[in-house]
Image 1 (cartoon, one colour):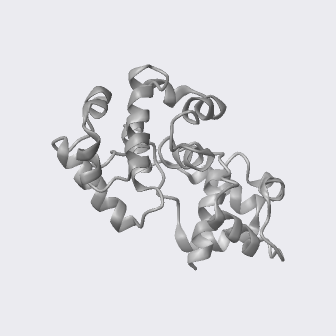
Image 2 (cartoon, helix red, strand yellow):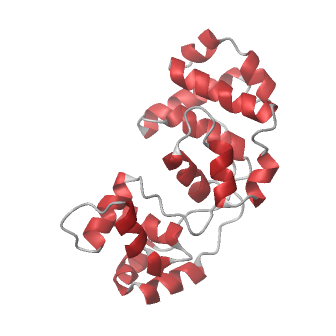
Length: 208
């Protein structure tokens, strides 16, 4: 099954040094898990389409359904016009719900209308990307945060809506309750400008 290819491994050494100094409690996590496997992907639309397909599914189910969708197009994501022209029953037969079929086509329509321009995503600010992607059906703030982190490898993203990171921060900072967005932002301030990497270690902390 085709995947969105990554570039060469990203160098996070500056982030690791900063985080270990700014928040010494991260040092054991850094030593245990090493550097994040986060690097920019070469095809942002492919990544967005796959994210839409995989929402609220297990990893295995998302992999299977995405493989069926891609197989219909010969193993790779086609041009936006081809997605729009695909009859809904074909995509539904691959395992997509009606909502995800509509969302995938809405993404394609935004690309066709040049409201989402792939090349621009690489150089736009985080705020500009948020404004560009939120109008797409099926893409919310959490999806944009994941896109910024794992597709564009932006270094300073704090996904305050992610339950795993909230739980990780609760454990890491020994809080009695799950932190809200304001609390998370305050606690993660020392991690800047590498909150993406700090957040990644919160997921690893939950796995430990």
